[in-house]
Image (cartoon, rainbow, N blue to C red):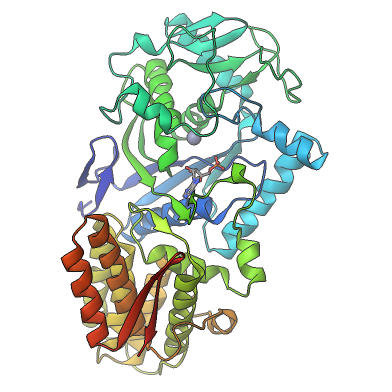
Length: 478
Ligand code: AMP
Ligand code: ZN
């Protein structure tokens, strides 16, 4: 198959051609949710962008098999293997059993995914289904000398590897800052970076779900789940592994360590990481208590697909700040876009040559490291072109497979999309303004204030005034 795709690979820190192990086939794995609470819209940013990646590859003609786990045991409140099991915390919070909590929040997660047009992966496997696979991996790691028993737990010995910190040359200290929540020291560990493969002893011994193992009754560590589940369903070689950037260390670093030690060869070639959605106080996180969910956005009158479009307008490798002002602007743009598409005259012959040109442009945008804002621009270019309505409609329908915005079926939904701030601007102008605001944000970040000012002037010349507020940039027509 002709190789078009370019993807940023966290492993090499470069945008590089994407070449799967088997021609035309892609084996893809996604770290699934820890089902102790609702997913917040930050988590869902990662799943939206991973969905776009999967659909972009399918759009390009690849046959994709995608696997995702559901973390229903073993993810402790600190990623550094300390603290209480998150599932148990959730169960106590709601006075329910762990399995009840898991079922409720797994269903809630897929309901949110449905609202956001996130396709369910081909295989979804809860960790509690695969205990024997995890035990087998731990046995092999012990046999091969990569693991040791201490204080009743089995640990992976990171000192046995030549290069444990595969993702970067950062120091251990720097990386540990990325570890979520409290970082406590476990005295059983030979090396600070060692991690638990199997727990039988924890200071929180009220763990509800426990299984027999050669090392006593216990439960698996979080990292072994993703290695075990992906190898079970995708085999020894994987093409792309996805997650949010907070998964890079320690989770994905540990997955690579144990998978490659177990398999005896390189495991996954491409690592795709989505940057965080932040609120004004920083990264959105479930442990912070108050967090934004899809249901909350719905209660406030936003259609969930407005949030999907909000995500598509920025690149997955840039942090994204959430604000209602920008969401309002996107809602207005979405509403106008859907209405404009609904108004197309669908009669007439499809112009096959024209269609092929825009198909290619759309694919080019996606193949350029999943440039979703450029892909959206192609939709506007199609609508602007002088080809007939039937061709435009066919193209939008095709592109919407990846964009997932119900562009040809969503007139009713668009009616529900809240939109106030952007009243008066047409959809092309709105898209242009949002792209300029994004560009100005980047310029400011790079301390290129002259460029930032020039962008402000450029917008003003078009009759658009922008204002920096605590919630982000807002704009109005003047
Ligand atoms: P969790 O349910 O905590 O295991 O997280 C599910 C997914 O959401 C993981 O891939 C995380 O890396 C990702 N994630 C967590 N917080 C954010 C955030 N604020 N923005 C984007 N993705 C996130
Ligand atoms: Zn994982």
